[in-house]
Amino acid sequence: MATIVDVAERAGVSISTVSHVVNGTRRVAEKTRQRVLAAIEEVGYRQDTLARSLRRSRTDSVGLVVSDPGQPTFADMVRGVEHEATQAGYTLLLATSGEDPAHEARSLHVLTARRVDGLIVAPVAHSDGRETDAIREAGTPVVFMDRIGSGRSGDQVGVENTRPMRELVGHLIEHGHRRIALAAGDLAVSTIAERHLGYTTALRDAGVEPDPALLITGSGLAAETRAAAAVLLGGERRPEAFVCASTETAAGVLAAAADLGLRVPDDLRLAVFDGFPHADLFEPRITTVRQPAFDIGATAMRLLLRRMNEDAPDGDEVVRLEPTITYRTSCGCAD
Image 1 (tube, one colour):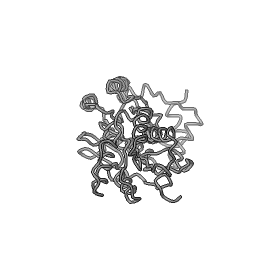
Image 2: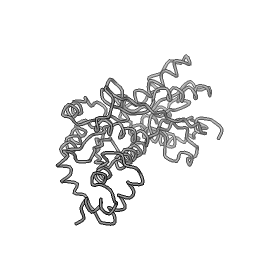
Image 3: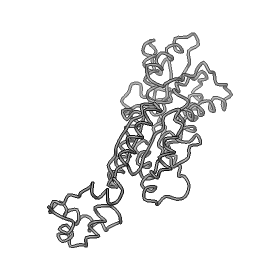
Image 4: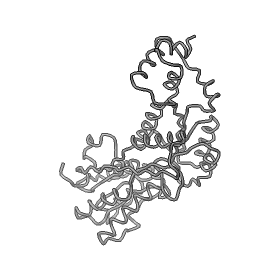
């Protein structure tokens, strides 16, 4: 079996240089690094990961907990985390919370039992944070992703929510609409609460008092939103426009409109925070606020790497990335 000594001899470098390349413990000139990697392949060297992790008291793995990795935005965040983790030599262990605090706690227990070197968590609504606080106090770094703010301590990365939603609703107001409904979802989720704030602020800026009857809350799932939107859209004073705080609520509103034979944008204007993948292919073309979801995940992993390597500054790091608004025909704009 080939050893690290064999690699060093084949590459013409020191054993320590091979170790730095394999373990990522120090920067090595790119030409030298490529020579070492080529030598590893040539001699068939395979590292004993388990033995190395026991010697270093590290597993070279990180954990990630999200509510539903099947949702497009979370899926992109997961890809961003995994990209950075792989580049740094870490294996990603993924767990779900299902928007259930008890399920989140179980997922955190499973990951910490596997001795991950760090955790990235998109906290569920109504999570009291005691589990993650205990994990951090025990010495495992934790970074919060997506659901940030609300007085939570620790390194965090997410997107700007309030201002973009305020701009989106303001745009509909500029089109002459006043009865604008919001399919929000669970206001206990910090991102949804911030988007709700943007909605109410835009209305009040225009001298329109928010009407509680035009607000849909609840689980935020498509089926529940569909039923609530059908009531609003089937009423005598149906809203002129709908803003949706997530892809899931947008699916519910669109389904309700279709059930009632309402067409977007002829009968109802629509705008969505998050939106759908390949929104340009929809008819009508849907106005969206698109999060840089991949970058959110990648940034979360970079924050975690700095914290694990004890290279982070004192105090918490909080990063807010900027989304992009694209106006299309669903809100009444020309194509």
